[in-house]
Length: 599
Image (cartoon, rainbow, N blue to C red; front, side, top):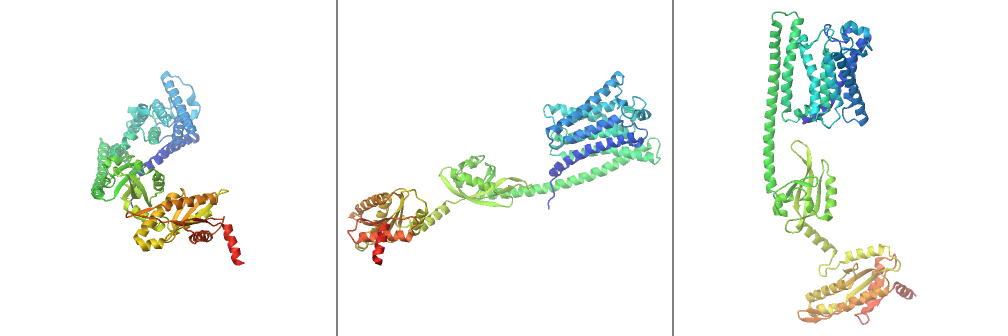
């Protein structure tokens, strides 16, 4: 399994370091304070001949560590102002100390804590931080106070960071190379080693708190930042190794005319050389692996490009509503050029009735799911085209989700076939009317719906008079023409919303919902009868065909079988009479006839 990427590791490591560093500084300051409280001299300085960390210095370091911790992450406004207050208080104290040194007068603040104990360890200006420390604390405190301030930080921030670090860097180097006289350090004066190290750590913590600012931003923003970090680490490690080696040689009694320095430089060179060789080999191995992966990726991309360029389907890479890339196959399928479909050009061409459905389906895609959706896209030169879209999350070579990838295939033929099959299942092929099953379904739906007061569902049962004679005389082909013509005339004679269906050979049923009674239903039936009786031109011959129509009105809750049987009975009553007429058969009449038959 592939491990976390280095960038992810760096992003997770920086906050941990940013919290650990000021916490460590607070611990160091607390240890020094405990040393003053208990009188343990070793807790106030690292080496007996080095200067102590004064109580005021420990207090300032602890305050700056707390202020840095408070501003890490995403602090709310109150925490930021508390941290700024602590930092500004340290700034004021540092200014007061520098003013005392410049004027040669003491305000007595340095004697508030542990005055007698400090006098024993620090002969001049007892208790007060050294000028080097006060100046460093001033700039470090300013840096901490500016962590969450964004305006005007382009130059001010790097200046404060550099100014806060320069004196502690020189001090730490002087301690390492035993050049304390160069920086004015003696047993009772100068910047303590612990103080210089703590100030350097606070500068690092403040920089980690804002990795979007220089100098950290300049480092992380470079593609070769790892190599630069290694180089800086090697350069910093060399003098550190030399200093530690020299201290070790002196501790074991190796002294002579520059003997300890010579051996220390040799040891430092060897150690740094070994580390450099190891890191260079590791980096070389990483470069070889990256080159191999890059070649494999380039080959895969080339194969993918060939497939995409020659694919029948249209491949679309979507980022939100914008198309980032469209395969050249879009030219043959939907018209081109491909650039025309980039950006919002693709989404804007989806049929307005399909946009909401498509967007809802795409929002439902998860890491492991893919969706198939049929919708319409407006082509460049041939109107709307039906397409089947197969979409899933697009994952790049680094494993990052980058929008969606969709394959579109034209589906006009499939849609046309499906619509034809649906029509065959619901409509009569000869007349184009609804077939029996569809007609009965619509009648059942009309009967089940609640109706406004005073409205009813009307049924007209139409039968062609002497249709058998027409077929026997003129042939079934002419009979089909006559039946199709009559069906069209019936459809033209009814209202919008009425259903006309062929329920048998020459039998046609009309469902007329929302009629206001027999009179309105009879008007519709008479319109049908008159229009159907007009001559039909067949191969130059004028044929006349008439209809016998039975009319009835359904009662609320009445079953379909009862309604259709009553309309059928009315039609056959007309057939037994003069034909070419409309017979009305009400439910009440049907009940009366049933009673007479039973008696």
